[in-house]
Image (cartoon, rainbow over all chains, first blue to last red; front, side):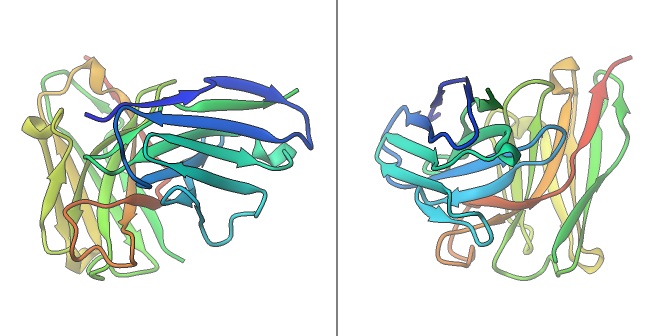
Length: 106
Length: 129
């Protein structure tokens, strides 16, 4: 199985900050990597697909990059409504998710 | 707007079979572009893909659960279902159903979905005697 390692597991940032989350795959997954946002008590929501494509309707402050084994998810200017847990997910070999990054407001 | 809603018992006894149904509204499950999937999340933990079904009935399962899982589709009712047998406390989780999409816009050439959107609200299933 392909293991997905997200870091950090949690982070605290201020409104307006640039926030970066990384996801590392245990083997090359090309660009077969997606990012989700899960607000407390809610279902996950797709934000980014195929590493860098913004899902329709998702604010442009969210972005993704990377290929191979190393991927980055960025919020360019943190907003209060971005408080959530963020997950990466690969689909190169079966389907597996990262363990999540909990984002809090400082 | 497509919506998915899980239904089924919230409490299942150990060694019994967990059964859930997902009802799709706002669209037809038989549209050939998508898979239909089950994903679970144990309390306070990460997400685990259980498996997926295509409208034709073709399935793909997580190997770690494959021996205990059956996912089926009922296209006239726009529903798909999950059965997980021989459950234990480790199967306690919020179970989500979701639509699975693929790169290029159609899943007809693929054996599994690439990403999931939208998701149902989720239903907590507790395994306990």
